[in-house]
Image (cartoon, rainbow, N blue to C red; front, side, top):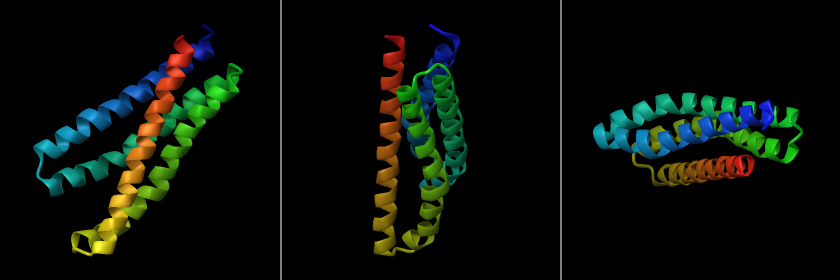
Length: 140
């Protein structure tokens, strides 16, 4: 396997592992261990960093795949990185703007918050599936 492809596979594996660990271990443990307000505050602090990790590893994999002349695979990882950037810069601020109204009991804000949160979870799952499919293809 050429070095750029190996590097991309390594970045994609790190990305998938980090995303899975955060989604299926960190988040559930935080909410099971801490009271909801403290858990939510901790997760709000972690999400910007989480998205930076996804952006960085996704971009590294995309770039090395482009160097290795694998444009389709590079495009998949560019999607993963770009989606994380959109979530970090667009969705997180919108969720934060809705939080006070949601916590005050405003039904419309709670519905909007839930819809955006659900959308972010779907995008996160799609990103993990994309990274897993890419890895399977590279390692096949």
